[in-house]
Image (cartoon, rainbow, N blue to C red; front, side, top):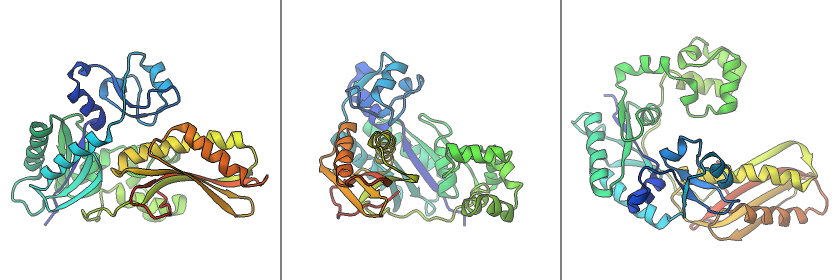
Length: 343
C-alpha cells in the first residue's frame, strides 16, 4: 500500500503573525528582524519578497530594495505559541508527525481512509479558523515529493502527486527543486546539459557516479522520485553551525571577517528553518595551521553580526600569529551540551 505523506508549510509564518496581530500592516511589505543597519531579516512577507527581500538578507540591503518595508522585532514566544496550536491540530489527524521547524512538518496519514488531499484541505482550514494563518500543503507517496509539492501553489494552496503521477511529475521537475541541489550544484548540472529531472534520468547510475561521485548516486534516486525515509520524530538538536575549511591558510583577520558574515547569515537562515529551540549562546571556532583549535562563546540569543565579529577577534588573538585553516560559526541551544553538531 502506497504511503500518504502530507507536508504542511506555513506561509511566511513570522511575518504572517505580525500582520495578523496588527491589521494595519495588511497589504504592506513587512520584514521581521533587526532594525539596525547591521541587522538581518529573519523573514519577509510576500509583498516584501516581490522586491527581492528574503530571510538572512542584511537590513540595509532590504531597505535599498524596498524603501517602504516595515520592520518588526522578532517575537519568538508568540511564534512558538502559534506553532503549538498548529501541532495540536496535526495531532487530530496523525500519530506520526515530524516537525522540521516552527512552521513546517511531515504527517503520515497512510492509516486514514480519506484521501490525502481531503485531509490536507481539512487541516489547512482548521489552521486558518483557529489561528488566522494560512498554510500550504503537498501530498505524495513520500517525503521528498510532498515537500516539493507544498511549494507549488503557495500561498494558501496545495498540490497532490499520486503514485501513478510520480513519473510524469518528476520528468518535468527542474533539478533546482531537488533537495541538495544549490546554486553551485545547478551550475555543475547545467554544464552537463541538465536542467530537469528528465534530463538527469538519461544518465546511467554509473555515469552519474563517475562524474559526480556519491552525490551522483543520490541524484539518480531523487530524480526518479524515490525516497524511502519514514516520518519520524526528529531528535532534539543540540546546536547548529556552519564551517569553512580553506584551501590555503588565512593570515588576515579582515578576510576572515568577510567569511564570518556570510556564515553567520547562513546559520541565521538555518535556525529559522530548522529549529524552534531557544538559543543559549553564540559560538565561533578557529582551527589553526598546526591543527590546534579554539572556541569563543558568548551567552545570549541575539545573532547580531557585531557579537560574532567580537568572538572572532577573541579567538584570533589566541592564535599568537598562526594562520587559520578552518572557521566555524554557530549557536548552541538552551538544552545543549558543550558540543556542536554540524549541519
